[in-house]
Image 1 (cartoon, one colour):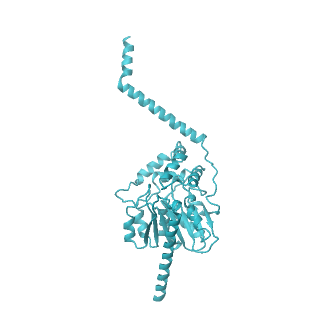
Image 2 (tube, helix red, strand yellow):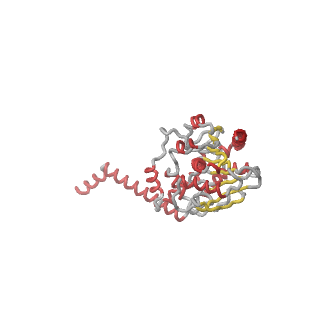
Image 3 (tube, helix red, strand yellow):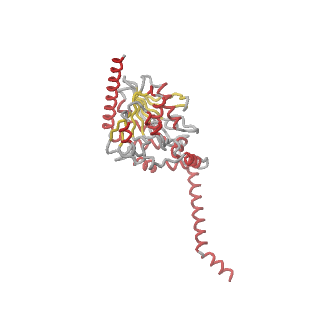
Length: 353
């Protein structure tokens, strides 16, 4: 059977075997992807029970820039208001800054926002941008904070949005404290994606056929635990881990995070265009961080007298979960010194009148 022998020889050809193996691998990959897309659509609960992040009063307001924004508030005590801004990630919410909220509630008016696209705030399918977040923060301070200019504390990428709001609306801010802020990587080492690349990635990740399934892969319990481990020196806070899963399994939960994952919410020039333009007192709390770098922070503090830094060690991005006493001591000292400087400047101003 000459024909049969020839056929066997073709099947034994390494190139043929390689092609068959590649084809089988691709078929298996397509089947796995299709299976996950189906599992995501049919088996994953995207309406998980979501309790409040704390037992404080929760309110909402309509931001002209960002729609419905939810926030927590405790006004039992008098004093200068404290406003807390969480970070941006695949499963963010106001829960991320609750240790600070709980520490100061009852001592002064305290507010904590769910930023647009997260927590109980509007999660609609729309364009999310640094300007939208900065405008939402400014809208909140202008319309909801009754006690005057606020001390604002922001976390990670939320620091960029808070700083942008402070630059545009300085009268709304008394001071700004940034915990593990992004934006201080050495530009030569920074790998922030360019705009065109970010837009390409967003189009890829947000493609309707697989966007939900792709996002669901990022917020499985093992994935959430893996990313949170990078922000804790010790054991991951179990409450934060459970709340991250719940808030990531809500209708519309993927829309804002896909902009973040694509790189479209970062401003590579934030230090030059925003941070260096601030004139109000600024405090940075930091140590080591798996997700952001602080290469240029020492230079920033040296060249700008209104910038101050305190290292909270050993921590990895969320110092208020592991060393809240140290964080509170640094914040209290900063605010006290800020008040003292402002009082002295006012007295000098009065003498010059």
